[in-house]
Image (cartoon, rainbow, N blue to C red; front, side, top):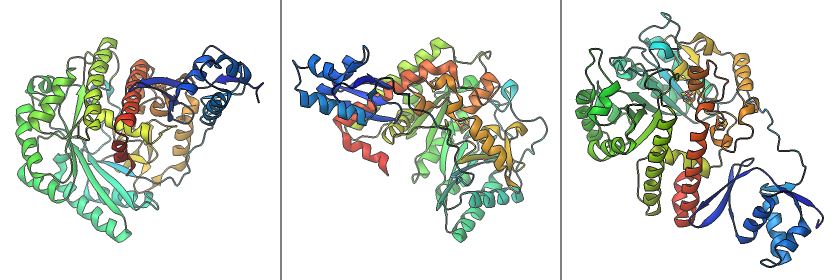
Length: 475
Ligand code: SF4
Ligand code: SF4
């Protein structure tokens, strides 16, 4: 054993709360280093060494037993290993064909009453085949979709039904009928059906609000912050901004619908990047509980696409809000920055993704015509069709998709330490940027790695200063 040549394996080091940690890439685990393991890793960072050389080199600070125990711990966690051993392989384990559906996103209409300039449903970024999709889903297709969802959820005792658009509430009558139908059929099948929807907020009339509240429907509102920022892109067809129309209705919703937290979803663009101001406005002035930010999905030639400097600006602001979130979590207070909450939860749960998201697997989108696609963003694209709610999923096509999109087939990502959490990024973004869902989103790697590093620091610090908070993520 003493003659064993050791080398550092794949990890990402970070510091938090005055302690040193490593994020162990093959196992996606976080490991806190003590003084001995830290010193061993430091030595090995300059090249492979024999165990007896490590013991001799560290003899001034640690006795032999400490070094051996440290080496054992680091080998156990695969932070180090025998020199020259082949790297951990990335087996292509395609999930089985009967993998259950946990979320169905139902596009109840492709029509919208806003004309947001950056919307992927319109313009050059549009993936929908022209003229093929009915503007509204009909009742029969909605019921067939519910049957599809219940059948595809297999042995799961709960399933999520998310209504989406276009502007979802333009088909409010269908929403009401479909929710009643799904609830009744869920009871008959012994399954809980959870409902949510995304809306632009323009059609939140009192009867709609009442219905959302009475039926415990989770709501996400698309809104980009104060009037001047929101109205840059979120406009009516006559070019007028939508803020004044939306916010009084959102306030009524927030007042009446208290059983489920109402979240805001903000699209960040080159022209709309004041994350702090948007966050404060939406939480403190409007009253949203949580706010999530997403950079606009578009090809790089659009004037609103984020450039490198904008990604940097976004990162700095995200980091500042993440620190605020951390201080709140240390004091057991809630803070509504959902981007960091979601990442910290994934780190805590040790997520190691072969796929960036559940699209085409546990999550599927259904278009107004009843065709099933990878997710809601691909509804209406025949290229990304996986079947239909009446014919079921084309299992051969799904298996081919899952095999082709496995992380193992993204060689650019294989040496990236952030791959367990990123796995190449959103397929829709890849399609828009590179013309294929198979491409990893290499335009934002630096951003993803910097943001993941920040979230690891937040996680490490929280685990030192208030570890009990992390139990929130264990339910
Ligand atoms: S897309 Fe970039 S950041 Fe994401 S896993 Fe691949 S190389 Fe890493
Ligand atoms: S492909 Fe993109 S938009 Fe679709 S579910 Fe995945 S992350 Fe979301």
